[in-house]
Image (cartoon, rainbow, N blue to C red; front, side, top):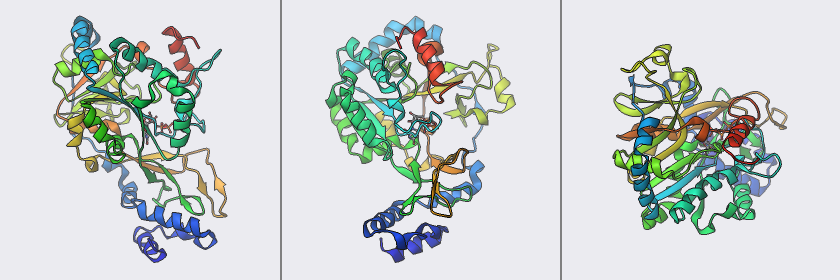
Length: 408
Ligand code: UTP
């Protein structure tokens, strides 16, 4: 893109300020800024003017979850079906590790965080240990796809390599980068993070399948005959990955997606809950849950919206190929965005100062016809690390790891 073309594009979107320091840049920096301007989707920025409308929900009704007693009664049968799928190589795992983990406040990728106390135990290591249990039990290596972003790719790849993938077989680990999106102030003006660089942040975890595809990994999935993809977050150190019982239940119930859920610990707990939206499976975020829904009861007198998702989903791969990535709703999230101030100095704000633009994996559920919410015991499978202290923190996850017999 030439300077003229860049000016034209920026004028169209009211972003001319991005060329403020153009004259001060080296030739190489100029080229890279023009390329970034060319590649940035500025059409999405208008959306911040009608933020609330973007994620408006339809009519919400309850969706029953498969609960622990039913799972226990069928455990052997489900596990046998899931094990068979794993042994036939029909299951892959996808680790979503492209996030910035800003709440944890470490500069390294979140998976590099050491949760050990008397020894080193990294988040990545916990996850791989959990997956290894299934590998050992089934006698089968499971392809593990790791999503990173431009901001943490190099650090993630080097760290895992250096630690020899914590015992995982290298040929079964595949990295792919997600896309970035520009970050703006509250008026939708893109920030600069350097004189020749727009502020960007990863574009949310909703683009994982599109990114797998654009990184050429779909061919591998098809070649290997992988039919099911277990997608999971980097921060839950207790979760079971490629859990045979979960896989078997989803297959037996003939659903195209399964979602691990936990019983909420309070009606207003901050987790997204499974529901039907206009008759299709969906997830309603805690801040969208009205008083009425929060207090609604099912026919057994139990809370009707009582099962929260833990970001561990099992997708039928072919269904994803038909999914329209473009119809995913955009979420505009307030964040702390490093930026150049009016004197051209880099500032790292302590409070949110603008918006990030993201699509979310949970919105994929609504595009699918059938979903099995599958209950897991929260003290056995849910220890997310979002913060340093308090709720969903390093502290709370350490206590849960110890409760589950992990030496820290
Ligand atoms: P979070 O919602 O916790 O976001 O991500 P985050 O960016 O990691 O953390 P904060 O909000 O800045 O503190 C849930 C999961 O989705 C992944 C994360 O790595 C985590 O596993 N994720 C999130 C991505 O892979 N890409 C993204 O763009 C965002």
